[in-house]
Length: 403
Image: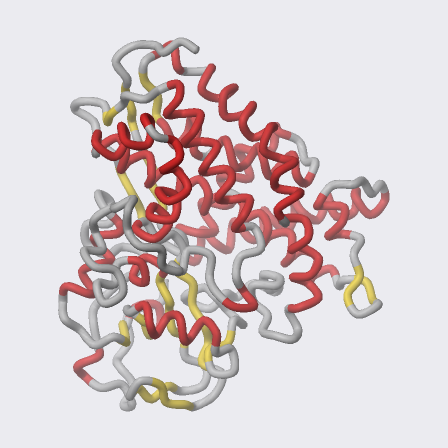
């Protein structure tokens, strides 16, 4: 961890806040309310914190929207705080247009409406298979029993990798998105070894899976470099595992703690698509950063080239200036373009798959376990990081449900 530093001369004193994004006070119990305190403090819309070498944080939806689209000033060249020391870039996430365009073009067709629709029956069967494993117990620790297992099995099937590898992949992903610098370095090394083995195998024996397509693709008439290939594969791993698991987990915690919401969805599944958008808005997941490309000014703030600014999706979704009563989950809230999947050229190509996985989960879980809550005497726990997460969610239901 980089020590806290003194604010540079160009940072106005009123913009300095003591905020450690890996450990904001209260994040273990409610990570979103822990972040929301930046709004409660009445600080300026853009603040600077001395942690991790010092970096900026955009706290309001309008600024986050503008910065997401302004890659000329706010570059995607490094999305982690502090900037990663790894030798590869997450492709195409850590590329600006037009460099990123051909790499994204490889991914987008694989996550279009038709491919996602073709996956749905298998995802539904998997959801029920997982539920079958514990429904008779009347309880489960939901994150390990379901939330982490659904997306990783879907991912492993997409890329045709062994299901037996899911536990080590989950460990590496967790270290990458919520670990300190040492844990992230460990995860990077492990991922390079793991992915490197499969790159060689799929080049020698290509299949029809997504992994083979990425490994053997060309960009502008040339083969991908080894670092480009690795960066693309790691980006797909991160995008498809932890974020979906976290979204499912936070939605389930809300339903466990709010019977009226749970019963509304169980009684009228047609509400589920609107509920998904509200969950994505209310429970923001990624906290990615940008790099200031050159000395510039925005919103009355002077930025210096090389500085970083974090654009937390949690603060976008909890901005009262955009969303009245932002802490309230309201399935009737008027539609609004939340920031869960980014915006512009870097909008997440896997958004359709993520929405489908969440929808199928809600439909099948509420059909089979319509009444559930948090286990008495126990509690949920959450965590902050590059990706906000829910670490434990002990659930109980009154009796085994039968189809």
